[in-house]
Length: 132
Image: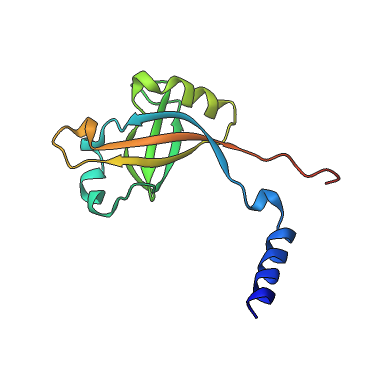
């Protein structure tokens, strides 16, 4: 029975497309979250977890910074990509590049710049199989 189950599992893995099994990303940057203390972060803090997905929203009409990129957690604005670190993120987004962001560190400290760190990643698409 074990041998049959092992063969069945091996056959299932064999027929799965490779691109369904591999997800790769290039780390663009790891940054502190700017403005955490001014937005919904304080009330959302107890529910936030390392690894949670974040949404990046470009704000080219932001009156304070033409390269502004807003950061949201589950639809709530929690801050911004720091101004001194947002040029590459803005450029990639303006060029249509899909970016992924996630919480990389949460720290229970007084300094709001040290409370949340997040990663911005570029998804890598696997090459299409030959003949597709």
